[in-house]
Length: 140
Image 1 (cartoon, one colour):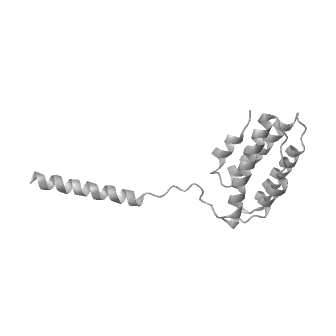
Image 2 (spheres, helix red, strand yellow):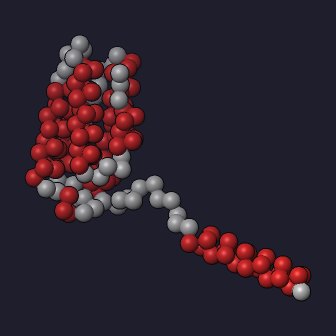
Image 3 (spheres, rainbow, N blue to C red):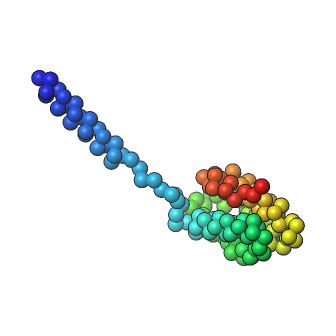
């Protein structure tokens, strides 16, 4: 009788563990993978990493303004995101980016920090998922 109970409990445990494996969700690195705005934002992050590296190494940074202007027109995953506040924050980002690109060497670091702060301010209101990643762009 104990053997039957043991086999039953073992089989039940095996069945439950198999069900848990089936119910596990696949980790999705980019939940908004196909939206043009999401794709652009990922490129913008890479551009910012390149700017950060250039500033740290004392190199002249290249211009990304024309490319980043697309954030105002790129289609988002959720159309409700494109509010007046989104556009205002987008324009603020672009203004800070222009200032950074036109910076003297002395003002480069402070203007870079302003651009990163603008990214953080917007992502605090919209799509907070990337905030942790944007924090990696900070320079002290």
